[in-house]
Image (cartoon, rainbow, N blue to C red):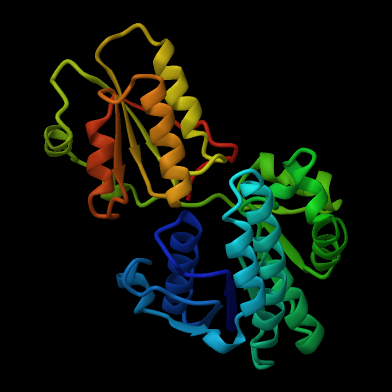
Length: 312
């Protein structure tokens, strides 16, 4: 079978990127012909050992919506409307980019497999041209459907009209669990098949966390809480930080693994400073897949307060 994977961008070490690349590699091992279509790829920062095993097709720089790029950049400089401005620019930039990405998928494939939002938009455009059936791995529906006023207003046509129209053309929706299965039913009125992600348990066997605890200066009596994920408000690192303020145990420490935008990092570091927790909250930054199991071994408790079902 010839399978066209569609993904927004292979730009960093995210869960969706890990899921997509591993699935593509495993399907190749089964004898299927696989290609990935995406905006761009960072072969250094996005799982280079995985990326080199699959064929990746990217959009040229000349096809990027330059005007929308510049508009979102300048709007983003407004501190007062920062989130609203960035959302406006990003949503409409995504719209035009997905149109172009959908037009780049050739007609000789048997299946289009789209993953992270908003690639269902690109798959929709591709299907209109090629009549190739779509399988959507819906790791979660767009966050817009859970936003509150006034942020929902800015992109209402893209989601209530365009996104729902695109999903009508999807032939099969796959979700990770019951929660997203229910969300898909509520938002789109569609059924979905639940297929849970697998775990490579061998990577986590016989791991020791002494090196990581020493690196970050933890004492033997320190009780370490670990949270792994991109630094953004959906992952709710700020709630973990705030909860630490109320904990009476003096040796309780919070270790945050992941990176985010300069705005998000500054926001979280500012919160830590205001709550006087600089000696109890550690920002580890991006961690390699090879070293991540050692971080799990180094902690006493793992936190997952994200507004999502689980990490990939």
